[in-house]
Image 1 (cartoon, protein in one colour):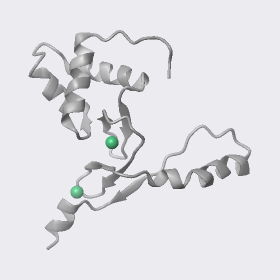
Image 2 (image 1 turned 90 degrees about the horizontal axis):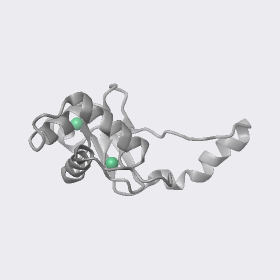
Image 3 (image 1 turned 45 degrees about the vertical axis):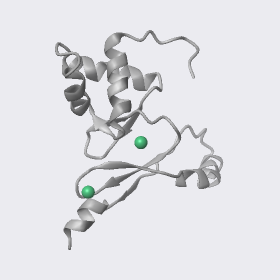
Length: 135
Ligand SMILES: [Zn+2]
Ligand SMILES: [Zn+2]
């Protein structure tokens, strides 16, 4: 955590509030649609820039999904995500399967001789909605 205090502008506070209220993962234009109702003059660019700042300050999570769209998540507790390969929806996994993999992840660093700084584990599948459509 950085020691310096982030000055919360009104825009940034509203963006964070809307993201927290959503209880789901939103891309920048979803956030923009919600924020615009409270701040009609805000632009998508401003929303995007503030989301980047918030994720830089680790106040929101930024998830990179293979579709290229960045998805933002206000849930900062340690959790993993699973992505639907049909509709692209991203859900929280209410447990942390990656926590059990920690010894394996650490071994990857020592085995390769790298100073390992990160690891991405990608969970994907077919969400209940999409699976239901098969019936
Ligand atoms: Zn789906
Ligand atoms: Zn999440």
